[in-house]
Length: 175
Length: 256
Image 1 (cartoon, rainbow over the protein chains, first blue to last red):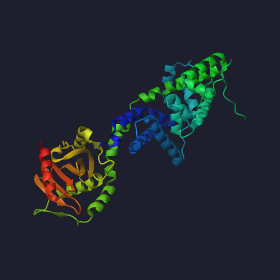
Image 2: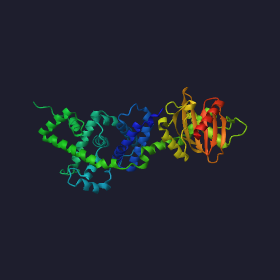
Image 3: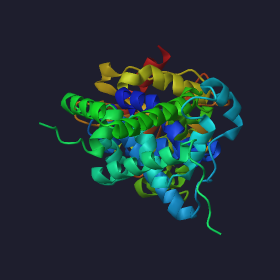
Image 4: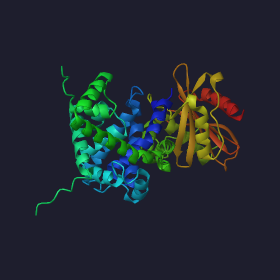
């Protein structure tokens, strides 16, 4: 008798996933208002589609998939790119103080480097490193083969390593 | 014998904790012998830790009020307001509502306009939701208390779904319904034969208490009455006299 969308198991899992979804949205869009809109649309869409789910498995990956698809279609529709700025520079000092300036990776450098990655590499890096999705789940979310996930992850990490390597002088522009 | 060099994918899996025990052991012994790969892996590991630390606090923030699941669910429940035109269209199909015709009052006295309006809304909602095999209710029978609280809060009037099992009708659940007069509560029941019956309640401080009146639509009857500031309509596809008798039982159950 209970409509499927009222299933407490799924609802509970959706609720538990909201902070991580929002975090990923903020990292993708680097703008809290846009991110909140995206999360909101994602939850609405998920509730609409809830009755199509046969079980409670992988609610997290399922939500990330919905959100990623919304994100991609938003990009296509609006033809806008997320701002190519590091996330939340205003918190930088607090972070720097917390992490210690001589840590292996300074927060400011890390965020700058992350902002410079191509979108597709940043998504993989965040889903795997921060959101703890398995490679297979990441492949599902992004709708690419797992080999593509691995190569994007590899390129993202190598690029990030170059960008945050303090010893290396920045690449000189040829004039 | 030298073990084959682990692939980059295996090195990443090692960093991300996604390697099998065997892979992990192989990577560890490889890194012990290959300082260059060891440096790469250490750098990836440091990146991963730094990213997690950098984003950790974002997930600890309180969600904005509109992003809580409760808020989104609540918003969805209000959708019938938005989808009013669809309900109205269904009502036109089901009852020929739209013109003044198609409605007649059975009995001598004309029912107050408010009661007729309530009956109309009750029948329109019954037509839309009772016919829905997949999702007739928004909250199920197991969420009776949540439903009562929700409906009561939105109507600003305490009400609970009556128990009609003695009449052979099992409570299925219900929802908040939209009417031109504001929110109403809809409780749905089903008997052993699969017949669905709805009890539609709406506060009406101006209504005088009045006994059940049958209001007839082209294909369905409704029995309506008012009691202590609350108007109720019962709708079920059954003969008017049986509906009337059932309505009396519903009224008694609501009073108890």
